[in-house]
Image (cartoon, rainbow, N blue to C red; front, side, top):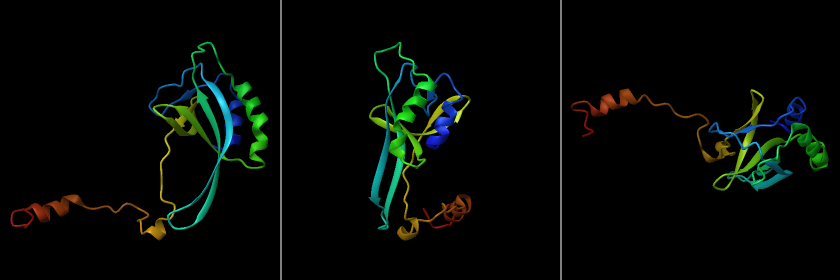
Length: 154
């Protein structure tokens, strides 16, 4: 979800709810401790220099059980930080404390923000020789020819 989509969804809400990938909800007394721009400047394994930027929010829970952030207040926080993004509309990532600081993608479903898992990927598959699609093997035919009596595999 892009920052603009996040803000647009917030403008249609009063309450605010985030759900982890395992279905558990982030406790309702969470704080948004920061809105930021995370920039990553790197060289991929094929030697291509790349740069990517994400809009990040950090969710944090404390002993303050009475805290309840409302969507209009989060819109105000985004408005205060809009200058960080210039004219960009970056993808959103959410940070949340688990065993370590976990990073999640963001989607919306049933009026709740869904934290989605992120995955690593090779960005230079064509240079690394990594197949673009998984090779599908017919295991049953291979097993029949090899493991049949007289097949020579045992």
